[in-house]
Amino acid sequence: MSPTTAGRKRTGRARSALLGAVGVLVAFAACEALGRSGTVRRAYLPPASEVLVRAVELGGDTAFLNGVGATLEAWATGLALACALAIPLGLLLGSVPTAAQAARVLIEFLRPVPSVALIPLVSLLLGAGSETTVALVTYACVWPVLFNTVYGLGETDPLAKDTLRAFGFGRLAVLLMAGLPSAAPFIAAGVRIAAATALILAVASEILAGFGEGLGTFIAQAGMATDGTRDVLAGVVWAGALGLVINLALTAVERRLFPWAPEHRGSRA
Image (cartoon, rainbow, N blue to C red; front, side, top):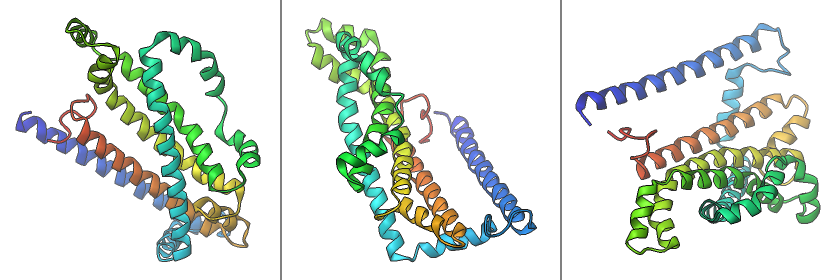
């Protein structure tokens, strides 16, 4: 890549970061002004500065941080289980058309079922603990990883597969040497999408349970307390910050592992 092109890439990334920061500041200022204007009672919408101060204070609360750790543990476990299930299944369905046709009806039946709708059933089977959260996160995260894996295999260069077959490589070798490398960037994108879904489900299931430990439990309990709106919004700030950090981290990993992917090409320059 030429120095001029690399410079344009860096300038574009800096401009995107600057615009993102401006958007956050504008939203912060709007919430601050609305909270202080008296249009909405402070009990319902405290100023953004107070919420931000409370969110920083929670960073020094050991009990709160333990709850955040419990949420992240359930998030990571569910996401890992989803990947362990979805990637091999996606490779199978993407490389064996008969298997894909046989599983199509079942997949299309299960995919639209919202994970939140399964909370009562899963709670009865597993109890209202971390196992329920992990199960719901796993179910929700299977789908983006599964479909991205199948789609990625479909993008494999036919010439690469034919060349390997011409040299006597079998179906499994072709899958591992041509299909999997081609699908890897798509799988990584599916994992990144699933990571956001996993965090949403982890927090949401804790909110609906309302007890135990976790970030969602903190938000639920704060919502039932008198004048707990500030704590609720501070918990939401933590949830949003965690989601942002996770997305940035996974995007950086994608850039490093798959620099040849079109969306990342040249981003490391």
